[in-house]
Image 1 (tube, rainbow, N blue to C red):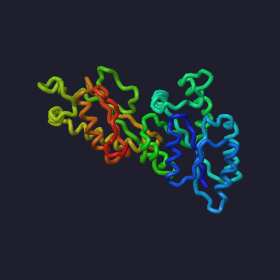
Image 2 (tube, rainbow, N blue to C red):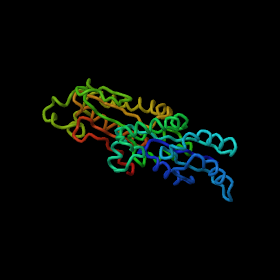
Image 3 (cartoon, rainbow, N blue to C red):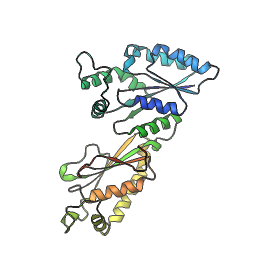
Image 4 (cartoon, rainbow, N blue to C red):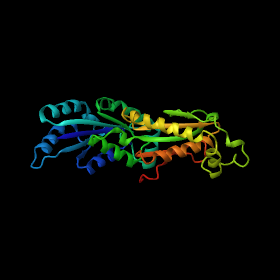
Length: 297
């Protein structure tokens, strides 16, 4: 039998991960003290109808029992013949603060006058040993619930990491600074700037007139093809790192014309081959990421 221990920071999506495993046939138990792990494993592995796989949620709510967890897991593997793997879910502080604000739930360590940021910091310290021994660590900061479910199920099935890589294509203007979250960056300032063409300054790279102007420029199609070819060659290597999220930034001077057009085109060409594509135009109004319309929300 296989046992997946699901842990992580409160608000990082542990409940969604456990539900995802339950949906693919795992017997799931949440918030179980480590002292009961061996008993649970024995019951599930040797009952009248032994379970092929199980998942147990263990987190800071059972912090009084965390010290005995490594020994319990070792005993399960050595004495119970059970394969144990660990899944740890992480998220950055901004995402966690936003999620707690949206759900209005109380953090389990928000006690004795602790603020929410202080509670999150204390929790990271409590759970650091679990993160260190986990087989998989997934950062859910920018993942939708649906993407997280697919990611967890792919890991449980042993599918390729590339099946769960999310790519964000974002446009920006160099005059406003380079995005700090960029993994790959392309500079399109060498192309003719539509901002200086009559009637185009107030438009952006999603408008038909701007698109037609850029597509008429010598070398535009070739530059796009070169960027797409480079990504096609590099994406498998990024996915096998493994990583869950890749940000591709495309910049021009103001971030409204050339980079917007290129991002829209690149996203369009990759939507059929990637599980999730996000698009963000930093310098346009309402520039938050929008998701691949082919992916159900």
